[in-house]
Image (cartoon, rainbow, N blue to C red; front, side, top):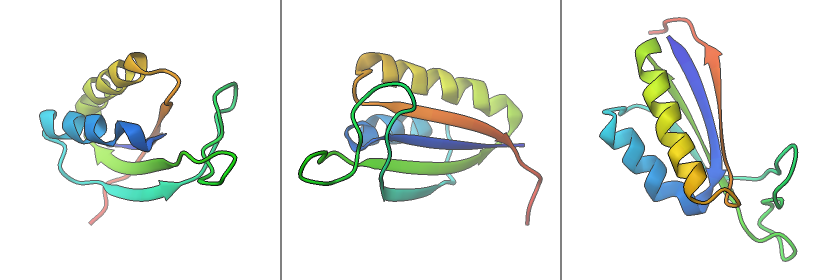
Length: 97
């Protein structure tokens, strides 16, 4: 089992939701408003007058065989609008309740 943390510009919300639906990934936790900035480039997303855009973030727990297809879908979203920003990080997860 893996945990996938996804942070993305709110402009990608519909596409991220569609990818989860298309891959039959139902369970997740979303933080609708998260701030951040990329480690290499891109504009900060602070929700301020100077940097008005905001991010959303999702934490989803997946079976190992679901990770690749979801990462592929997220790469496709990112390539369609690379300046918007979307990042995903895969972490090991132990089975819970």
